[in-house]
Image (cartoon, rainbow, N blue to C red; front, side, top):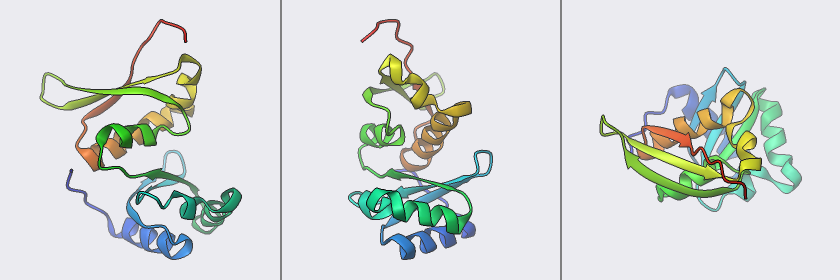
Amino acid sequence: MAEIKITEDCMQLISQFENMTGAGSRDCIIDERNDRIIFVINPGDMGLAIGKRGSTIKKASEIFGKRIEVVEYSDEPEQFVKNCFMPAQVLSVTFEEDEEGETVAYVDVKPEERGLAIGKEGKNIFKAKRLAERQHSIGDVQLVQDDEDF
């Protein structure tokens, strides 16, 4: 597991989010470019974080003044990377080392869900890369190019 440095701002946000939702959070990223805050939620706490029909996460978004996104943590790097791409359906995640010895995660999604996995202006792939690096020391996350239709 990677050593995570959490800023004072993030510690305050995590504390507020936990008090508001009852969901345990182990990390957060403030993404100014996409005007959002991404929380890494403890396993099993997603229901608390989101609330009935999204009511809790909507309230948090209003209070913080930014879009709130949540990703469920997993000790398993493969599952964690899959969680980063939700709601896109990930078919597989494989890991290889590059020339510099960095771990690269190769993610395969259905062709029709590729746009969802990437996100507007690449925001979902950005989220996956940042969180995978922080949580599991994964140097890069790339979507597999697949010419085959499913």
